[in-house]
Length: 367
Image 1 (cartoon, rainbow, N blue to C red):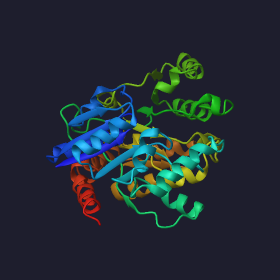
Image 2 (cartoon, rainbow, N blue to C red; image 1 turned 60 degrees about the horizontal axis):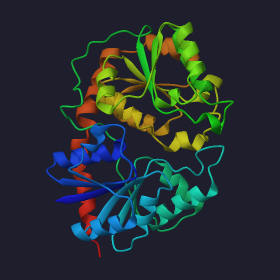
Image 3 (cartoon, rainbow, N blue to C red; image 1 turned 180 degrees about the vertical axis):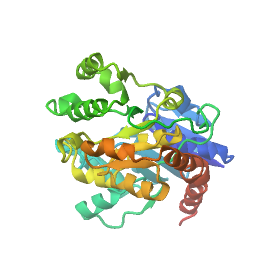
């Protein structure tokens, strides 16, 4: 069967879903506008149509007799807005983040209004976290039809390096890795990346090796990190790499880390509202798990706490002062086995995809 996805550009969540759908024997067709940096993401789809105008979108809808499109969007891109506004098709809006209420320094109000339009006018909202519940309550919205489909580990593909038997046992001399995009410096220069620097410095003081992967570091905000690397030989700065290369490199580390910048200050983050940590889950968590890495994370992340209670893949910390004691008490072999179970069974895309297919078919067949 043909399933249709749309995304302004191609990022990991739609590509993961597409790959799992293909593995289930389905044809996955993507409508997009901007070429991705990583060709692997595009190869996860059966067919890709790059469009430049609304006439091309309408032509594809007519050509394939599309009934349902699963849309992956941030909050304001024109492709998502056009599709949701087309009442001839059913749409699923899959948000990456709900930006109103996320940042202490707001985006343009127009962007918030556009995202509210997507939430209120799509046939359904697909959510991977709790942000939608908080948003509906905050905005007092009614009759929002929604369903949950979590972010998951990549399907077992020959391009993604498979997890090998446990080989690590170190604790305080561990190799730690942090991946992700850090806040834009112009948004809040005083605190941009500042908490991360202090967190990394503290981890280095325990004797850990720390590496950071992020394209954002090389867009005007790398000086502090490069200075730290020159001060500490155990700290390495890497540019962003493609997903298949990233997974291969992550295998060489012992832990993935995901610490809020506010952790150093024993309080809340300086630019992100606390409700965001309560209700969202970082995409990179699944990259760590999929590469066999236990996770050290700030216990402010409620969604990670919930998953961790089920799969026991991580070490939650409230204060870096307690890091040394917690690491010394950690059973690395046991936590590594838990991560492998989560990656190959509990959070594996191929094991979940039938739930999404069932939802697609139910929506398509609704009156």
